[in-house]
Length: 171
Image 1 (cartoon, rainbow, N blue to C red):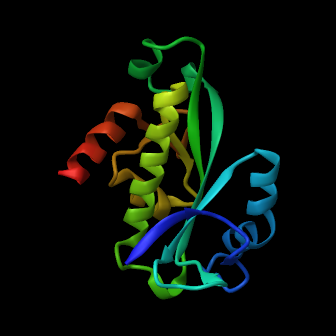
Image 2 (cartoon, helix red, strand yellow; image 1 turned 135 degrees about the vertical axis):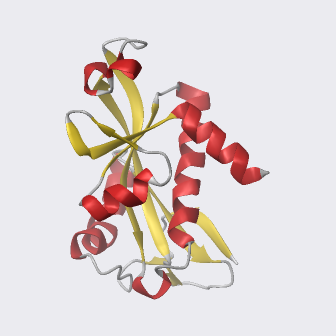
């Protein structure tokens, strides 16, 4: 069984390998520093039975963001003030040994859940992500992410879509 935890010193960051060196380096060298400075928070997927140092199966990071509403689709933008808040899914990665097992979906659902926690406390219009390439873009689009008109690799998942998806996931 797996569980999501906030990144801590007990997690084995050095052994993590998702096949993407920038994502590996972020986890190894930057994630904890960002957490200590309040820049972002990183959450890890681990096996419940693991003991320290706990191997990391996958991870995602979140940070707050502010965008100009005119960067959204005209239908979304006309309902909003000029500057709007959201949450950015900064990184999402799965260890190579655990890829293609549906665990990335579990990480994304957990990120949506964390977004809703933030939304309930402070608001926000949705979850944003910068897809690294067209394959990543297609991956996110299958969960309802919409490309931004100004940059097709910048994607947006509206709060209503997140609420509906999590309601469906919990049923």
